[in-house]
Image (tube, rainbow over all chains, first blue to last red; front, side, top):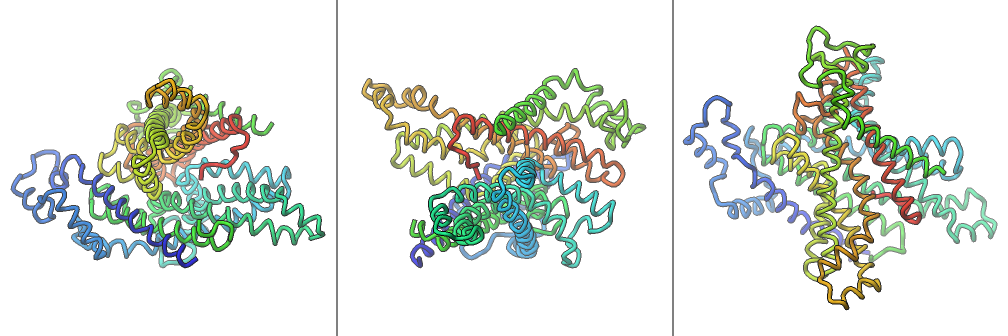
Length: 311
Length: 273
């Protein structure tokens, strides 16, 4: 188990390196330099001398390979560069935003798990019932709904009309501010979890070991608790892990919608003003976050299900 | 029975969106961009403006019809690009194996490590907003699952009798791949592409909502919702209809994809995560 754990953790490093390379390559083929876009006012051509000075200051005049080496060496020292616009270290900018994002992602996932898993379970225990039908229609809809639209509608109903909850912002960190964005963000993973849990439980229910358990006289409750729940859990944990990726992606849109001060809104704002170091840094941190969660899921997975250990 | 219903509903919704896009010039009572009239801005739905009007007094119904053209273009073109990339890489990796297979598998794993919307956002940041960038960004984003499926299908088809017969006859590798292997894995690839269209429509809407996709005044469903957020208190109907259009078309593609998969292979009931 220890060896497995170490191997999975070490596997993150080459992936992060390749992602860093990929991001670097994508942003080095930017047509039109940053300096030109900064000085372009649509009327006069940018002063070439001024642009050359800016490029020198930002280190953009060096050859591509040299810039990449500098980038990687800095990265190894946890230095993500300096913002083109504010001249603040990128790592500081990210640090000031990431905690709000983590809070939002965790709240959304908690909501999805606490509602989605029991719903899927109940639906599977009574297949064909009204609850089952409603859950499945809800799950299909939840996977197709544009989350930011749902957020907009909830903002209208619960914030503007009923005045129950604040319509945007982090406020002073009160739980009232996180409800709308977290529920909005949680809807898609909730739908998928309900669906996966239902499918997983139905699958396990028809397995041989469940029939054996029934025939040796275990009660329905015992069978569900001892055999069905534990086996379905593996599938649920995997779904949660995989959903984190799209949740982090979607969080970018939801944070912007609710003006949530997270890394997602930082990323969108930086893309809009072409602040490349911040964009690169934010993407890298998001990927790292996703990889860490996936690794954690793999480890939990191996801990729950002895059958797949040392895969 | 229920599966057939899903397939039928999916086909119906998809047809509806395609018809809306194709027939927009005849169905729309107003021009989606030019018929702006500040005297009739933010009107609630009535007999003239079925879905009401927006802040510039443009007819929301007409804009939604034309918006279908953008969503469909993005959905279809990006999935064609994804399928071509995914199939080419996956099939050659599975067929040739060796270092090429390792390289492709490594690249696929890296792509899967980047949340797809984040990757699309990065590409949009480089290329700038607009329809061509959207097509490229979303076309490069979602090929990893197709690639995996193409690779594993090729691996299992490679040992089939007819593929080996073709090898014995001295057919070239490319001819075998395109005439013997590709036709036999079209089903799952088509399912992936259909489901991918749904997520591409969603991503386009999200990127345009963020102001990084289709730019105003062109009627993308996503950017219509950006305007709607500003008007939420005054004119909530501006927010309702574009979102409903996105929802119904994505639902259509998803049901169609699920239905196709279930009718092609009743054993493969698990969904792409």
